[in-house]
Length: 498
Image (cartoon, rainbow, N blue to C red):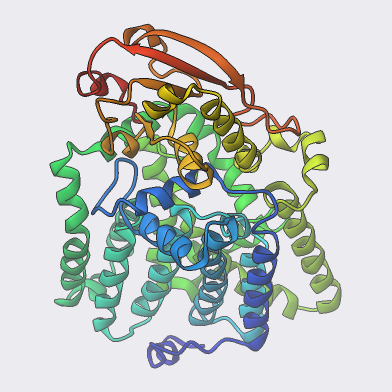
């Protein structure tokens, strides 16, 4: 496809039917395994946060929590309920990668190759869980597609859609700022003044800021807690940086990473890719900003969409040079092995007992942390039920972190009110004055409980029943009595942001 042909199809969503099949199979696979183990702690936290509607939270903007709470309200309390949207988001990304390939000049075969590459990549792992990352990846892919169109000469009013997408995306995760910085520098280095020489890009900036403004106002009114969160994350900068190359390799496919690598070279070096050179520059620049700031390794991984799409064109031309069957077989094997490896590593494909006996729990921490929450809630229920009636009437549950509190809020039955000093949960406290008997769950944070209570004693230990070493296994459940001060006075000392 020539640049002039691309210019005339701004809103065409036409892709080969095989791309739609790949997207559909991706959704089917994700939903099939969506309820195999259980909730991730973050997923339950988002549901509870969404039940406390606000323009922001300590650790993220409001969009994902509100959507998570809506999913549970509509479909019930289950892991599958909150994972329907992430599965659909992953399918949308598969289609968007194919669309980017098409608008970079890729043939129908290239578009199919792009869709397959995306479907068996880290996007598959991201689509299993309901986190802020899923929507963020959609926003990156959609904006990159729009930028491909704009750089090819599409109607400049398309910038308004960029602004709308960015504004909505910033209400989900502010890592889109890395993409904005990368694109700005990419346009500057590529000398694409024509793309910004109108009122429309500046209108896009205005729309994005207007949509983002409610969260910014909330952050300002609450002391900019997300900046505190960012500083805590940057405290692990060395570990974050060390994870970048392994993550890039895994995310782009253990045996298909060469597709994205070839795509990046094509965008930066090929004469055919000159119109889109700015995007080729933007991806590495966004990643460099993450490295410099010490952010988490996945913060700029959304740029992989355009490199997968560009790489599909390189692979398509490689196939066209002869021995297409042999080369196609090599690609197919690489795709299948990559997909199976990532599914084995990140999806709950094994029976729980088999998984527990393997080395996998020590490899990817998110998966073991989906196991054991119903048993966790039952253990705390047993501790509460064993309290004398007068103590039970005055009891409150205090947890070490938001995962524990959220699990008890969503899965617990017959429990006293649940509180925590962790992140946004702290904002929803403190407990009422009459609640002077405390069932404490998890490690103490801060570590010295004697600052707050006269006495505490352990009465139970969390055991998920299968021996999976996750964040809750072996943690204590304690009963504490004798408040040393009022809850209002003690509450600031119980706050933790991490």
